[in-house]
Amino acid sequence: MDIPAAAVNDLDWGSFSERGPWQLTSKVPSWRKSAPRRRQRQAKELPSLYRAPKLPPIRRGLTVLRVLGAAVVLWALKERGTAQSQAGISRRLRLAAERLGPTYIKLAQIISAGEGVFPAELVAECRKLRDQVAPVRYGRIVDIIEHDFDRPMHEVFRTFDHNALAAASIAQVHRATLRDGTHVVVKVQRPGIDELVKKDLRVLAWLAPFLIGRIPIAALANPPALVEMFAETIIEELDFHLEGDNMLDVAEIMVKLGQTGFVIPRPHPELVSTRVLVMEELEGFKFDDVVGMKRAGVNTHNVVRTGMIGFLEGAFIHGIFHGDLHGGNLLVLPDGRTGLLDFGITGRLSDAEKQAFMKMMMTATMNDVTGQVEALRDLGALPPHTDIARVIADLGLDGPPLDPTKLTPEELIAELQRIMKALLGYGARMPKPLMLYVKNLIFIDGAIGTLAPELDLFAEVTYIATHFFTKHGATFASELGVDRSEWRLDLDGIKAGFGVDPTEMEQLSHAELQERRAMINRRLAGESPRKSPLRKLGS
Image (cartoon, rainbow, N blue to C red; front, side, top):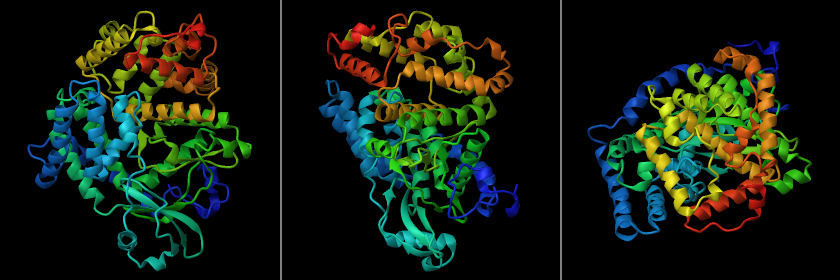
Protein backbone atom coordinates (compact mmCIF):
# COMPACT_ATOMS: atom_id res chain seq x y z
CA MET A 1 0.00 0.00 0.00
CA ASP A 2 1.04 3.63 -0.46
CA ILE A 3 2.66 5.30 2.53
CA PRO A 4 2.21 9.03 3.24
CA ALA A 5 5.40 10.94 2.51
CA ALA A 6 5.67 12.27 6.04
CA ALA A 7 5.22 8.86 7.61
CA VAL A 8 8.39 7.09 6.68
CA ASN A 9 11.89 7.39 5.25
CA ASP A 10 12.50 4.89 2.46
CA LEU A 11 15.51 3.53 4.40
CA ASP A 12 12.99 2.25 6.98
CA TRP A 13 11.64 -0.27 4.46
CA GLY A 14 14.25 -0.55 1.69
CA SER A 15 17.97 -1.33 1.56
CA PHE A 16 19.03 1.82 -0.29
CA SER A 17 21.90 4.30 -0.12
CA GLU A 18 21.78 6.82 2.75
CA ARG A 19 21.83 9.89 0.53
CA GLY A 20 19.89 8.98 -2.55
CA PRO A 21 18.94 11.42 -5.30
CA TRP A 22 15.27 11.01 -4.37
CA GLN A 23 13.09 9.38 -1.72
CA LEU A 24 10.69 6.55 -2.54
CA THR A 25 8.06 7.82 -0.15
CA SER A 26 5.67 5.16 -1.44
CA LYS A 27 6.38 1.46 -1.79
CA VAL A 28 4.05 1.51 -4.79
CA PRO A 29 5.01 4.13 -7.39
CA SER A 30 2.45 4.53 -10.15
CA TRP A 31 4.42 2.36 -12.58
CA ARG A 32 4.55 -0.48 -10.04
CA LYS A 33 0.80 -0.85 -9.66
CA SER A 34 0.49 -2.77 -12.91
CA ALA A 35 3.28 -5.27 -12.09
CA PRO A 36 1.02 -8.07 -10.73
CA ARG A 37 -1.23 -7.88 -13.77
CA ARG A 38 1.77 -7.90 -16.11
CA ARG A 39 3.20 -10.98 -14.39
CA GLN A 40 -0.09 -12.80 -14.77
CA ARG A 41 -0.24 -11.93 -18.45
CA GLN A 42 3.29 -13.21 -19.00
CA ALA A 43 2.52 -16.43 -17.14
CA LYS A 44 -0.46 -17.08 -19.43
CA GLU A 45 1.63 -16.43 -22.54
CA LEU A 46 4.62 -18.57 -21.50
CA PRO A 47 3.34 -22.02 -22.52
CA SER A 48 2.77 -20.83 -26.07
CA LEU A 49 6.43 -19.81 -26.23
CA TYR A 50 8.07 -23.03 -25.03
CA ARG A 51 5.66 -25.73 -26.25
CA ALA A 52 6.69 -27.14 -29.60
CA PRO A 53 4.48 -25.63 -32.35
CA LYS A 54 3.56 -27.51 -35.52
CA LEU A 55 5.53 -24.93 -37.48
CA PRO A 56 7.88 -22.17 -36.28
CA PRO A 57 7.82 -18.57 -37.61
CA ILE A 58 8.86 -19.46 -41.17
CA ARG A 59 11.42 -16.82 -42.10
CA ARG A 60 13.16 -16.78 -38.73
CA GLY A 61 12.95 -20.56 -38.53
CA LEU A 62 14.71 -20.98 -41.87
CA THR A 63 17.47 -18.61 -40.77
CA VAL A 64 18.01 -20.48 -37.51
CA LEU A 65 17.98 -23.87 -39.22
CA ARG A 66 20.49 -22.70 -41.81
CA VAL A 67 22.93 -21.30 -39.24
CA LEU A 68 22.61 -24.10 -36.67
CA GLY A 69 22.50 -26.76 -39.39
CA ALA A 70 25.74 -25.50 -40.88
CA ALA A 71 27.37 -25.60 -37.44
CA VAL A 72 26.28 -29.21 -36.81
CA VAL A 73 27.24 -30.39 -40.31
CA LEU A 74 30.72 -28.89 -40.05
CA TRP A 75 31.16 -30.51 -36.65
CA ALA A 76 29.99 -33.88 -37.98
CA LEU A 77 32.41 -33.68 -40.90
CA LYS A 78 35.46 -32.45 -39.01
CA GLU A 79 35.30 -33.26 -35.29
CA ARG A 80 32.65 -35.85 -34.52
CA GLY A 81 34.18 -39.03 -33.14
CA THR A 82 37.51 -37.35 -32.39
CA ALA A 83 39.07 -36.21 -29.13
CA GLN A 84 38.00 -32.67 -30.08
CA SER A 85 34.31 -33.58 -30.54
CA GLN A 86 32.92 -31.82 -27.46
CA ALA A 87 35.13 -28.75 -27.90
CA GLY A 88 34.30 -28.63 -31.59
CA ILE A 89 30.53 -28.62 -31.26
CA SER A 90 30.78 -26.09 -28.41
CA ARG A 91 32.83 -23.68 -30.52
CA ARG A 92 30.54 -24.02 -33.52
CA LEU A 93 27.41 -23.44 -31.44
CA ARG A 94 28.99 -20.32 -29.95
CA LEU A 95 29.79 -18.97 -33.43
CA ALA A 96 26.22 -19.75 -34.51
CA ALA A 97 24.86 -17.81 -31.51
CA GLU A 98 26.93 -14.80 -32.54
CA ARG A 99 25.45 -14.90 -36.03
CA LEU A 100 21.86 -15.36 -34.83
CA GLY A 101 21.92 -12.33 -32.56
CA PRO A 102 20.61 -11.15 -29.17
CA THR A 103 18.30 -14.03 -28.16
CA TYR A 104 20.93 -16.68 -28.81
CA ILE A 105 23.66 -14.56 -27.27
CA LYS A 106 21.49 -14.25 -24.14
CA LEU A 107 21.04 -18.02 -24.07
CA ALA A 108 24.80 -18.43 -24.37
CA GLN A 109 25.35 -15.93 -21.54
CA ILE A 110 23.06 -17.92 -19.25
CA ILE A 111 24.90 -21.12 -20.15
CA SER A 112 28.23 -19.35 -19.53
CA ALA A 113 27.40 -19.07 -15.83
CA GLY A 114 26.38 -22.73 -15.62
CA GLU A 115 29.67 -24.40 -14.79
CA GLY A 116 28.78 -27.77 -13.35
CA VAL A 117 25.33 -27.59 -14.94
CA PHE A 118 26.38 -27.61 -18.60
CA PRO A 119 29.43 -29.25 -20.24
CA ALA A 120 32.68 -27.43 -19.42
CA GLU A 121 33.62 -26.92 -23.08
CA LEU A 122 30.28 -25.26 -23.83
CA VAL A 123 30.54 -23.03 -20.77
CA ALA A 124 34.05 -21.93 -21.77
CA GLU A 125 32.94 -21.03 -25.29
CA CYS A 126 29.83 -19.19 -24.13
CA ARG A 127 31.91 -17.05 -21.78
CA LYS A 128 33.37 -15.42 -24.87
CA LEU A 129 29.97 -13.87 -25.55
CA ARG A 130 29.59 -12.10 -22.20
CA ASP A 131 30.93 -8.77 -23.43
CA GLN A 132 30.61 -9.03 -27.20
CA VAL A 133 27.27 -7.37 -27.88
CA ALA A 134 27.42 -4.28 -30.11
CA PRO A 135 25.44 -1.30 -28.76
CA VAL A 136 22.42 0.14 -30.57
CA ARG A 137 23.12 3.50 -32.20
CA TYR A 138 22.16 6.59 -30.22
CA GLY A 139 19.36 7.72 -32.54
CA ARG A 140 17.39 4.51 -31.98
CA ILE A 141 17.78 4.91 -28.21
CA VAL A 142 16.36 8.44 -28.41
CA ASP A 143 13.37 7.15 -30.39
CA ILE A 144 12.54 4.58 -27.71
CA ILE A 145 12.83 7.03 -24.81
CA GLU A 146 10.72 9.70 -26.51
CA HIS A 147 8.08 7.16 -27.48
CA ASP A 148 7.81 5.55 -24.03
CA PHE A 149 7.85 8.85 -22.08
CA ASP A 150 5.74 10.66 -24.70
CA ARG A 151 7.87 13.81 -24.68
CA PRO A 152 11.06 15.14 -26.27
CA MET A 153 14.38 13.89 -24.93
CA HIS A 154 15.44 17.34 -23.68
CA GLU A 155 12.35 17.56 -21.45
CA VAL A 156 13.52 14.49 -19.52
CA PHE A 157 17.31 14.76 -19.50
CA ARG A 158 19.71 17.70 -19.34
CA THR A 159 22.53 15.48 -20.63
CA PHE A 160 22.63 11.97 -22.01
CA ASP A 161 25.87 10.14 -22.83
CA HIS A 162 25.76 9.04 -26.47
CA ASN A 163 28.09 6.12 -25.73
CA ALA A 164 26.67 3.16 -23.83
CA LEU A 165 28.18 2.43 -20.44
CA ALA A 166 27.41 -1.25 -21.04
CA ALA A 167 25.61 -3.16 -23.80
CA ALA A 168 23.97 -6.54 -23.28
CA SER A 169 21.75 -8.75 -25.38
CA ILE A 170 18.41 -7.34 -24.16
CA ALA A 171 19.28 -3.74 -23.24
CA GLN A 172 22.05 -1.22 -22.83
CA VAL A 173 22.85 1.35 -20.14
CA HIS A 174 23.76 5.03 -20.50
CA ARG A 175 24.80 7.68 -18.00
CA ALA A 176 22.63 10.80 -17.94
CA THR A 177 21.53 13.75 -15.83
CA LEU A 178 17.93 14.75 -15.21
CA ARG A 179 16.65 18.27 -15.75
CA ASP A 180 17.46 19.12 -12.11
CA GLY A 181 21.07 17.94 -12.52
CA THR A 182 20.63 14.57 -10.76
CA HIS A 183 23.06 11.94 -12.05
CA VAL A 184 21.32 8.72 -13.13
CA VAL A 185 21.82 5.64 -15.24
CA VAL A 186 19.26 4.77 -17.90
CA LYS A 187 18.58 1.22 -19.07
CA VAL A 188 17.02 1.07 -22.53
CA GLN A 189 15.73 -2.03 -24.29
CA ARG A 190 16.95 -2.88 -27.78
CA PRO A 191 14.41 -1.93 -30.44
CA GLY A 192 12.25 -4.82 -31.57
CA ILE A 193 13.76 -7.25 -29.05
CA ASP A 194 10.38 -8.29 -27.65
CA GLU A 195 9.12 -9.57 -31.01
CA LEU A 196 12.47 -11.13 -31.92
CA VAL A 197 12.79 -13.02 -28.62
CA LYS A 198 9.28 -14.47 -28.89
CA LYS A 199 9.91 -15.60 -32.49
CA ASP A 200 13.20 -17.19 -31.44
CA LEU A 201 11.60 -18.98 -28.50
CA ARG A 202 9.01 -20.53 -30.81
CA VAL A 203 11.76 -21.59 -33.20
CA LEU A 204 13.76 -23.13 -30.34
CA ALA A 205 10.66 -24.88 -28.98
CA TRP A 206 10.01 -26.40 -32.42
CA LEU A 207 13.66 -27.42 -32.88
CA ALA A 208 14.40 -28.78 -29.39
CA PRO A 209 12.65 -32.19 -29.67
CA PHE A 210 14.69 -32.99 -32.80
CA LEU A 211 17.96 -32.43 -30.89
CA ILE A 212 17.33 -35.01 -28.17
CA GLY A 213 20.13 -37.57 -28.37
CA ARG A 214 21.45 -36.15 -31.67
CA ILE A 215 24.52 -34.34 -30.34
CA PRO A 216 26.32 -34.90 -27.04
CA ILE A 217 25.69 -31.47 -25.56
CA ALA A 218 21.98 -31.52 -26.40
CA ALA A 219 21.62 -34.94 -24.80
CA LEU A 220 23.13 -33.67 -21.58
CA ALA A 221 21.22 -30.43 -21.51
CA ASN A 222 17.72 -31.87 -22.26
CA PRO A 223 16.81 -29.36 -25.01
CA PRO A 224 13.01 -29.06 -24.42
CA ALA A 225 13.55 -28.46 -20.70
CA LEU A 226 16.31 -25.98 -21.49
CA VAL A 227 13.98 -24.03 -23.80
CA GLU A 228 11.27 -23.94 -21.14
CA MET A 229 13.73 -22.71 -18.53
CA PHE A 230 15.15 -20.12 -20.95
CA ALA A 231 11.67 -18.84 -21.81
CA GLU A 232 10.78 -18.47 -18.13
CA THR A 233 14.04 -16.60 -17.56
CA ILE A 234 14.13 -14.22 -20.51
CA ILE A 235 10.46 -13.24 -20.82
CA GLU A 236 10.49 -11.22 -17.58
CA GLU A 237 13.43 -9.16 -18.87
CA LEU A 238 11.22 -7.75 -21.62
CA ASP A 239 9.21 -5.53 -19.24
CA PHE A 240 11.06 -3.02 -17.07
CA HIS A 241 8.00 -2.47 -14.87
CA LEU A 242 8.78 -5.94 -13.54
CA GLU A 243 12.48 -5.22 -13.10
CA GLY A 244 11.68 -2.11 -11.07
CA ASP A 245 9.25 -4.20 -9.03
CA ASN A 246 12.00 -6.78 -8.44
CA MET A 247 14.36 -4.06 -7.22
CA LEU A 248 11.89 -2.82 -4.63
CA ASP A 249 10.95 -6.33 -3.50
CA VAL A 250 14.59 -7.31 -2.90
CA ALA A 251 15.30 -3.98 -1.18
CA GLU A 252 12.35 -4.58 1.15
CA ILE A 253 13.20 -8.15 2.12
CA MET A 254 16.78 -7.15 2.97
CA VAL A 255 15.42 -4.77 5.60
CA LYS A 256 13.02 -7.42 6.90
CA LEU A 257 15.98 -9.78 7.27
CA GLY A 258 18.07 -7.15 9.06
CA GLN A 259 20.60 -7.60 6.26
CA THR A 260 22.58 -4.35 6.10
CA GLY A 261 25.28 -5.48 3.69
CA PHE A 262 23.46 -4.71 0.42
CA VAL A 263 22.48 -1.55 -1.42
CA ILE A 264 19.89 -1.58 -4.21
CA PRO A 265 19.72 1.46 -6.51
CA ARG A 266 16.44 3.34 -6.30
CA PRO A 267 14.37 3.18 -9.47
CA HIS A 268 12.95 6.59 -10.35
CA PRO A 269 9.45 7.07 -8.90
CA GLU A 270 8.09 8.20 -12.29
CA LEU A 271 10.57 7.41 -15.09
CA VAL A 272 9.97 3.69 -15.61
CA SER A 273 8.25 2.22 -18.68
CA THR A 274 8.15 -1.13 -20.44
CA ARG A 275 11.42 -0.38 -22.26
CA VAL A 276 13.12 2.36 -20.21
CA LEU A 277 14.28 2.26 -16.59
CA VAL A 278 15.86 5.31 -14.94
CA MET A 279 17.63 4.57 -11.68
CA GLU A 280 20.07 5.87 -9.12
CA GLU A 281 23.76 5.56 -10.03
CA LEU A 282 25.92 3.62 -7.58
CA GLU A 283 29.70 3.90 -7.58
CA GLY A 284 32.16 1.39 -6.18
CA PHE A 285 34.83 -1.16 -6.91
CA LYS A 286 34.41 -3.80 -9.56
CA PHE A 287 33.90 -7.17 -7.95
CA ASP A 288 37.33 -8.43 -9.01
CA ASP A 289 39.23 -5.30 -7.91
CA VAL A 290 40.74 -6.93 -4.85
CA VAL A 291 43.67 -4.50 -4.71
CA GLY A 292 41.40 -1.46 -4.75
CA MET A 293 39.14 -2.90 -2.05
CA LYS A 294 42.00 -3.75 0.26
CA ARG A 295 43.55 -0.32 -0.20
CA ALA A 296 40.22 1.15 0.90
CA GLY A 297 40.20 -1.11 3.95
CA VAL A 298 37.36 -3.34 2.71
CA ASN A 299 37.28 -6.78 4.34
CA THR A 300 36.85 -9.01 1.28
CA HIS A 301 36.07 -12.04 3.47
CA ASN A 302 33.06 -10.19 4.86
CA VAL A 303 31.96 -9.26 1.32
CA VAL A 304 31.84 -12.96 0.41
CA ARG A 305 30.09 -13.98 3.64
CA THR A 306 27.49 -11.21 3.30
CA GLY A 307 26.83 -12.22 -0.29
CA MET A 308 26.31 -15.86 0.61
CA ILE A 309 24.05 -15.21 3.62
CA GLY A 310 21.99 -12.52 1.88
CA PHE A 311 21.41 -14.71 -1.16
CA LEU A 312 20.44 -17.76 0.90
CA GLU A 313 18.21 -15.84 3.30
CA GLY A 314 16.35 -14.19 0.43
CA ALA A 315 15.71 -17.57 -1.19
CA PHE A 316 14.89 -19.67 1.87
CA ILE A 317 13.06 -17.18 4.08
CA HIS A 318 11.24 -14.91 1.62
CA GLY A 319 11.46 -16.83 -1.66
CA ILE A 320 12.97 -13.92 -3.62
CA PHE A 321 16.58 -13.56 -4.74
CA HIS A 322 18.69 -11.87 -7.40
CA GLY A 323 18.86 -14.50 -10.11
CA ASP A 324 21.88 -13.41 -12.14
CA LEU A 325 24.87 -12.80 -9.90
CA HIS A 326 28.04 -12.10 -11.85
CA GLY A 327 30.86 -9.58 -11.70
CA GLY A 328 29.13 -7.08 -13.97
CA ASN A 329 26.04 -6.96 -11.74
CA LEU A 330 27.86 -6.24 -8.49
CA LEU A 331 29.78 -3.31 -7.05
CA VAL A 332 31.56 -3.16 -3.72
CA LEU A 333 31.00 0.25 -2.17
CA PRO A 334 33.87 1.96 -0.28
CA ASP A 335 32.16 1.14 3.04
CA GLY A 336 32.23 -2.61 2.19
CA ARG A 337 28.57 -3.02 1.31
CA THR A 338 27.66 -4.69 -1.98
CA GLY A 339 25.62 -2.85 -4.59
CA LEU A 340 23.28 -5.15 -6.52
CA LEU A 341 22.54 -4.20 -10.13
CA ASP A 342 20.38 -5.57 -12.96
CA PHE A 343 17.26 -7.27 -11.62
CA GLY A 344 15.95 -8.50 -14.95
CA ILE A 345 16.37 -12.09 -13.79
CA THR A 346 15.01 -12.60 -10.28
CA GLY A 347 14.16 -15.87 -8.57
CA ARG A 348 10.63 -15.97 -7.20
CA LEU A 349 9.60 -19.11 -5.36
CA SER A 350 6.13 -20.41 -4.66
CA ASP A 351 5.44 -21.46 -1.07
CA ALA A 352 6.03 -25.11 -2.05
CA GLU A 353 9.34 -24.27 -3.75
CA LYS A 354 10.47 -22.19 -0.77
CA GLN A 355 9.75 -25.10 1.55
CA ALA A 356 11.68 -27.41 -0.77
CA PHE A 357 14.68 -25.06 -0.66
CA MET A 358 14.47 -24.96 3.15
CA LYS A 359 14.36 -28.73 3.25
CA MET A 360 17.29 -28.98 0.86
CA MET A 361 19.42 -26.77 3.10
CA MET A 362 18.41 -28.41 6.37
CA THR A 363 18.91 -31.96 5.14
CA ALA A 364 22.21 -31.08 3.46
CA THR A 365 23.66 -29.79 6.73
CA MET A 366 22.44 -32.96 8.49
CA ASN A 367 23.70 -35.30 5.74
CA ASP A 368 20.16 -36.60 5.27
CA VAL A 369 20.43 -38.03 1.76
CA THR A 370 16.80 -39.06 1.52
CA GLY A 371 15.66 -35.59 2.52
CA GLN A 372 17.94 -33.97 -0.05
CA VAL A 373 16.62 -36.07 -2.93
CA GLU A 374 13.04 -35.47 -1.76
CA ALA A 375 13.71 -31.72 -1.78
CA LEU A 376 15.05 -31.90 -5.33
CA ARG A 377 11.93 -33.82 -6.35
CA ASP A 378 9.72 -31.21 -4.70
CA LEU A 379 11.53 -28.48 -6.65
CA GLY A 380 10.67 -30.24 -9.91
CA ALA A 381 14.11 -31.67 -10.67
CA LEU A 382 12.56 -35.17 -10.61
CA PRO A 383 9.03 -36.28 -11.53
CA PRO A 384 6.50 -36.15 -8.64
CA HIS A 385 6.14 -39.92 -8.24
CA THR A 386 9.84 -40.76 -8.41
CA ASP A 387 10.93 -43.70 -6.23
CA ILE A 388 13.37 -41.87 -3.93
CA ALA A 389 14.93 -45.03 -2.48
CA ARG A 390 15.64 -46.37 -5.95
CA VAL A 391 17.25 -43.10 -7.05
CA ILE A 392 19.52 -43.19 -4.00
CA ALA A 393 20.49 -46.78 -4.71
CA ASP A 394 21.03 -46.25 -8.46
CA LEU A 395 23.23 -43.19 -7.90
CA GLY A 396 25.17 -44.89 -5.10
CA LEU A 397 24.23 -42.17 -2.63
CA ASP A 398 23.76 -44.72 0.15
CA GLY A 399 27.40 -45.81 0.08
CA PRO A 400 30.66 -44.16 1.13
CA PRO A 401 31.55 -41.06 -0.90
CA LEU A 402 33.98 -41.39 -3.78
CA ASP A 403 37.05 -39.16 -3.86
CA PRO A 404 37.25 -38.20 -7.57
CA THR A 405 40.92 -37.29 -7.30
CA LYS A 406 41.73 -40.92 -6.48
CA LEU A 407 39.97 -42.39 -9.52
CA THR A 408 41.71 -43.22 -12.77
CA PRO A 409 40.56 -41.28 -15.87
CA GLU A 410 38.60 -44.31 -17.07
CA GLU A 411 36.92 -44.78 -13.67
CA LEU A 412 36.01 -41.10 -13.36
CA ILE A 413 34.51 -40.85 -16.85
CA ALA A 414 32.61 -44.11 -16.37
CA GLU A 415 31.20 -42.87 -13.04
CA LEU A 416 30.03 -39.58 -14.57
CA GLN A 417 28.42 -41.38 -17.50
CA ARG A 418 26.68 -43.80 -15.12
CA ILE A 419 25.23 -40.96 -13.03
CA MET A 420 24.11 -38.99 -16.09
CA LYS A 421 22.44 -42.03 -17.63
CA ALA A 422 20.61 -42.76 -14.40
CA LEU A 423 19.40 -39.16 -14.02
CA LEU A 424 18.16 -38.97 -17.61
CA GLY A 425 16.41 -42.30 -17.10
CA TYR A 426 14.46 -40.81 -14.22
CA GLY A 427 13.45 -37.78 -16.28
CA ALA A 428 15.66 -35.37 -14.33
CA ARG A 429 15.50 -31.74 -15.40
CA MET A 430 16.73 -28.35 -14.21
CA PRO A 431 13.75 -26.13 -13.24
CA LYS A 432 14.30 -22.38 -13.38
CA PRO A 433 14.55 -21.69 -9.59
CA LEU A 434 17.09 -24.48 -9.12
CA MET A 435 19.10 -23.38 -12.15
CA LEU A 436 19.28 -19.78 -10.87
CA TYR A 437 20.22 -21.03 -7.39
CA VAL A 438 22.98 -23.31 -8.68
CA LYS A 439 24.24 -20.62 -11.06
CA ASN A 440 24.52 -18.13 -8.19
CA LEU A 441 26.33 -20.67 -6.00
CA ILE A 442 28.81 -21.21 -8.82
CA PHE A 443 29.41 -17.47 -9.01
CA ILE A 444 29.87 -17.20 -5.23
CA ASP A 445 32.33 -20.08 -5.42
CA GLY A 446 34.34 -18.12 -7.97
CA ALA A 447 34.07 -14.97 -5.86
CA ILE A 448 35.60 -16.82 -2.92
CA GLY A 449 38.50 -17.79 -5.17
CA THR A 450 39.02 -14.13 -6.09
CA LEU A 451 38.28 -12.32 -2.82
CA ALA A 452 39.19 -14.87 -0.14
CA PRO A 453 41.14 -17.85 -1.57
CA GLU A 454 42.53 -18.70 1.86
CA LEU A 455 39.03 -19.09 3.34
CA ASP A 456 38.51 -22.35 5.24
CA LEU A 457 35.42 -23.76 3.54
CA PHE A 458 34.54 -26.18 6.34
CA ALA A 459 34.63 -23.39 8.94
CA GLU A 460 32.58 -21.10 6.68
CA VAL A 461 29.88 -23.71 6.08
CA THR A 462 29.74 -24.29 9.83
CA TYR A 463 29.36 -20.55 10.49
CA ILE A 464 26.63 -20.04 7.89
CA ALA A 465 24.65 -23.14 8.89
CA THR A 466 24.79 -22.17 12.57
CA HIS A 467 23.76 -18.60 11.69
CA PHE A 468 20.72 -19.87 9.79
CA PHE A 469 19.46 -22.27 12.39
CA THR A 470 20.09 -19.84 15.24
CA LYS A 471 18.35 -16.92 13.51
CA HIS A 472 15.72 -18.75 11.47
CA GLY A 473 15.28 -22.06 13.29
CA ALA A 474 11.71 -21.25 14.32
CA THR A 475 10.81 -20.44 10.71
CA PHE A 476 12.32 -23.68 9.46
CA ALA A 477 10.49 -25.62 12.16
CA SER A 478 7.08 -24.09 11.42
CA GLU A 479 7.42 -24.28 7.63
CA LEU A 480 8.69 -27.87 7.56
CA GLY A 481 6.88 -29.21 10.62
CA VAL A 482 10.06 -30.40 12.35
CA ASP A 483 11.42 -30.08 15.85
CA ARG A 484 14.20 -27.48 15.70
CA SER A 485 15.99 -29.24 18.55
CA GLU A 486 16.61 -32.20 16.22
CA TRP A 487 18.91 -30.21 13.96
CA ARG A 488 22.59 -31.13 14.23
CA LEU A 489 25.31 -30.06 11.83
CA ASP A 490 27.00 -33.13 10.35
CA LEU A 491 30.43 -31.73 9.46
CA ASP A 492 31.67 -35.14 8.32
CA GLY A 493 28.80 -35.18 5.84
CA ILE A 494 29.76 -31.70 4.66
CA LYS A 495 33.32 -32.87 4.11
CA ALA A 496 32.09 -35.90 2.21
CA GLY A 497 30.12 -33.54 -0.01
CA PHE A 498 33.40 -31.97 -1.03
CA GLY A 499 34.64 -35.46 -1.91
CA VAL A 500 37.22 -35.70 0.88
CA ASP A 501 37.86 -38.21 3.64
CA PRO A 502 36.39 -36.68 6.84
CA THR A 503 39.00 -38.43 8.99
CA GLU A 504 41.97 -37.05 7.08
CA MET A 505 41.16 -33.36 6.47
CA GLU A 506 40.36 -30.80 9.17
CA GLN A 507 40.52 -27.78 6.85
CA LEU A 508 40.06 -27.10 3.15
CA SER A 509 40.86 -23.70 1.69
CA HIS A 510 39.35 -22.59 -1.59
CA ALA A 511 42.83 -22.59 -3.13
CA GLU A 512 43.21 -26.26 -2.16
CA LEU A 513 39.76 -26.99 -3.58
CA GLN A 514 40.88 -25.45 -6.86
CA GLU A 515 43.90 -27.75 -6.92
CA ARG A 516 41.59 -30.72 -6.45
CA ARG A 517 39.42 -29.53 -9.32
CA ALA A 518 42.44 -29.13 -11.55
CA MET A 519 43.41 -32.69 -10.72
CA ILE A 520 39.91 -33.93 -11.60
CA ASN A 521 40.05 -32.07 -14.91
CA ARG A 522 43.35 -33.78 -15.69
CA ARG A 523 41.65 -37.12 -15.01
CA LEU A 524 38.83 -36.21 -17.39
CA ALA A 525 41.41 -35.23 -19.98
CA GLY A 526 42.84 -38.73 -19.74
CA GLU A 527 45.93 -38.14 -17.64
CA SER A 528 46.99 -40.85 -15.24
CA PRO A 529 46.98 -40.18 -11.50
CA ARG A 530 50.12 -38.52 -10.28
CA LYS A 531 51.41 -37.41 -6.94
CA SER A 532 50.13 -34.13 -5.64
CA PRO A 533 50.86 -32.08 -2.51
CA LEU A 534 47.19 -32.57 -1.61
CA ARG A 535 47.61 -36.31 -1.21
CA LYS A 536 49.22 -35.80 2.16
CA LEU A 537 45.94 -34.08 3.17
CA GLY A 538 43.95 -37.17 2.31
CA SER A 539 42.67 -35.97 -1.08
